[in-house]
Image 1 (tube, rainbow, N blue to C red):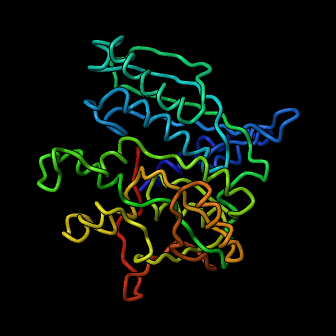
Image 2 (spheres, rainbow, N blue to C red):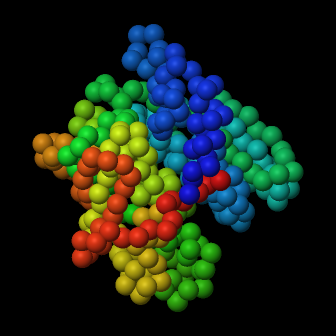
Length: 328
């Protein structure tokens, strides 16, 4: 679980967080920095570390794209439109031995996604280290004119929705480390692709402004990230396992019992959006999904109380040993 990381944030860094500059007590996916003649500037920072978030032998362009997309996902969760980012890059280990070539390929990946998402690099730093390669990106976005999406707005009676499919990245990580599995044809896998290059739901997040009551991106696992929403909102969540959307590849591995529902809902790095909305807004949600060309599925409801429970196909509460994915 990511409990230790959140305790560190609460005990060490939250006391340092600005109340004047919209740090939101470090509870949300990004800050809301007030800017003169603007509502605010949406800011987020994430770091990716070699052997924690990506394999040492991964292609540099894919590492770059994953680093940028994970940050973009934070802005999607706030309903923001990105426009710029800073990059701090520490090149270490084997990557530093042929640093210029590694950086050229790395930058190609950034160029592809800068064009795709309409974002520009505005500054940063690059250094060499004996330690692991580390990528730190600070990303800046324009505020949603209908107000930001926060984790703290879920209300009792709200529906719980999730975009796309869940469990692809968790399965992709397993397959990435077992490329000889007979299920993989010539090493090709939808789940590995999703693990390497997540899909930040920028258009969906922006369109959910004024429609969703709360939102965040699924980086630590569906179950744990819903727990974050419930904790911030002072409510509980009830999920139905048979409503959670899975891709064809995940369904295949579930059927063969080589992957479990628990792994799917607690695995990290899906970078889909989990959000809540009043049942009265269901038609608006479906219209928003069509506009964003993104699948959206209703998977549960918000209830009074604390925590999150998930029901199996028989309506019984599923025991879940693992709360979520840890990046620490």
